[in-house]
Image (cartoon, rainbow, N blue to C red):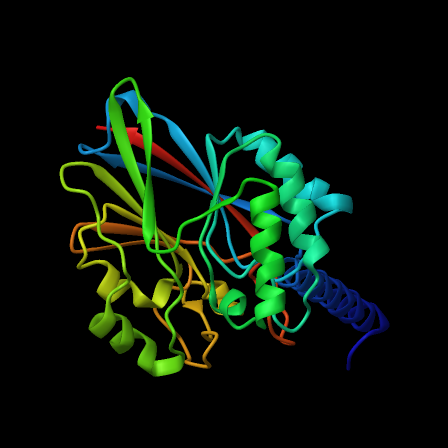
Length: 288
């Protein structure tokens, strides 16, 4: 026969376990659906990287998709300021073709261009814009001195040393055919011999091709971190609907090329980002 004291002890134990489980569930949900900005830092060390540029810092922003972070993007700007970058790069899809909030992009350009040089490349959402809307993006970038690399490069110089940054346009293909398209048609720009070469390119899934071109470092986006990140497994789905795709976030190496993939800032679909908070990427380049 169960005594009243034993029943009370069981109920107390059940209540404690239930509370612990509820707290754990609430904490997991809080982390899973966290929309606060995160910073991911990478250090790239290379014998090719010139000593004159040692410690050079690049902040990468990608896939904004018209997202706001504070009034006039102040929250995002403050995080970037805290990182003290030498250069800011946009790796595509700062606009969203279905939202077309150009003020969002302009406010970010306005607050950042006053402090940092900015380089950019186009993403698929940029290239899917109607001609008049695409011109709005071009005009915003030109107004604030954002230099768009589209099949060309620029040279950074410091005390006689050089670093070459190239940028390529988004390919005129979509889905499973885009890798083959780029392999057949190229990207319209090549690295400079005997220099440290960085490539800005939107689509990280093209890395099997990009890694054969001779670039030292590729900065890319597009994959949105796989939208839903499975702990210890990676991203769940690509923008084209492929499950468990490669190259969703982080650092990859192939054929002597390193690629950094940003998870992005915004959201282009109705499915929420889960275990996948908006991300600012900081890359610090070191001379070995």
